[in-house]
Length: 368
Image (cartoon, rainbow, N blue to C red):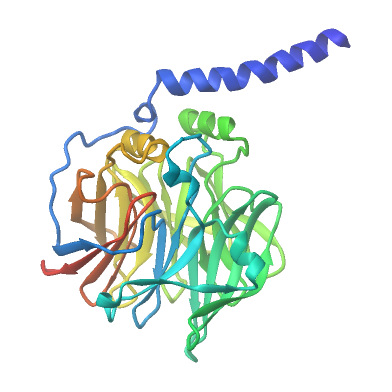
């Protein structure tokens, strides 16, 4: 019927307009909650920015011997900004050796060349076996859909060689990935909706449609759902527990994998901050958390990098236990570091990544 078609078209126009107005009228703090109005700057030791990182360092994973892989160049928002900085972004994978921090970062070559040209990296996962083989799992946001790229790290030449690209209908808004074998992984879908305006509306209404997916090397299945924004997923080398950060609910959920690789919720660690990426120290089992004390400010910073967004790094001891202990190791109001998104530690050396800013290196001298 003509009347029904017209009503459908009007609805299609009204919904994005309503989402836009809702965003402008109600800041992200409405749903996320900015529980911390003041950030008291402190550092765990001497900290300095790493030269050569200017377009963010959104996620970081490290090997047992201190090689840190870093994703940079993330296009976190489709908002237009005339600043040339946004036009110069290029997706890359960087390498930083925590054994020799004075060497700085270097860009890794990627084979084949066309994969390098298409790279839009986000979350990272790492597989490392006893023989020394290293595989890097990279969330790649492409125009024709989401993929998880699996690379082999060729140590002598310092390059990444593509092994396979994984696409699946259940991998549609992927944020992070954790390797569970040579080809298997858990991945988070941080939204259910695909369109940018619909994602904004989903964030503000918080319908808990986000999920975690398990891919067994052939097919994907939903492992857990009911998240508002499932952000990061990590697991210790034993694989006996899986941690998932929920940025909107501002917590870390602790799961036990079932034999069919679905996840059973065990406990929740409430952090009251905008939780971003997680990392596990393989030596201690501690969970290292990068977070955004003001979610309002990180949203503004993503749209305009000149807007300061505070940073925060937490360490959670005994995260799967009955009484996890949370310690703040780093906090800054944005004047030193904007929008912390990842943190890894190795032999009292700390790397802190960001969504859009630089990469910070710290020598940890406080007691751990």
